Image (tube, rainbow, N blue to C red; front, side, top):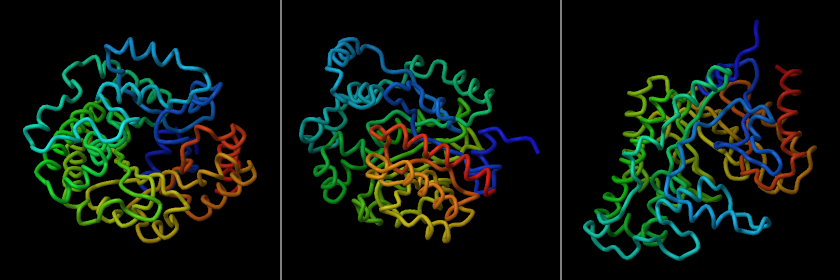
Length: 352
């Protein structure tokens, strides 16, 4: 039997079927590491990421970023450009809309301009180019760090938005409706461009559990996510839906499955029991991630990473699994990343 393409491999894995080997990714966005501009290509990831063009009119901001000392780590430039577009300042307390006390005041907020087609010019060609190379393509709607919960609290301030959910639901609903509309627009752009996986994310949990109650999540967020997913699938019926949250969001998994989520990420092993999730949801839900803790990636040894990869393959494979780091690898030694990829390839060749 000929070897599968990465795209075939990923689609089988995320629909809980058995591929020729378990696919591998380095995260759920494009990875650039020191000295390696395209880490996904360098390490042979099975997934590539379609990206919108950055917003225009940011020359002064980009000049400021270029003047920063080389030892200053500011994170993803693409993400910072989105922050700038939304006038979001993580270094200041509260959000720029924290003083609003009525829907009318919130209505004065300026959201990104979605009418400029230059933002997604070339997206179709990106997807086609990677498909022609046999690669799976995923895409994330541009956002402040999460489509709904995170964007809302960054705009309102964390405590203020939690108070909105409890005491001022009209404000919370208005803001979430605007964010949902933005997400739907961008999700449709990605679906129509032909991505295989729509990446949706919101950090609604901490290591010990949810940041809000399941009932509150079901009231404010589940119906909006359902709407986003249904409309995206109307545009692309075979679209796979990915949902990310750091921390322990186990209590939301049945609700996510019910609204059509195919795969969850990152399933951090120090927060969630991936084996129990696999046992309960079987062929209804795939796992993307599950490898390593933050300390293991940053200060662990290659041998520790190799042992972790073998354990996850034995526990969670061979179907319904896409192996990836469960934490960001921005500061991980390249030896650990290489050990992750090499062990996934070598171990599977011997075991599957």
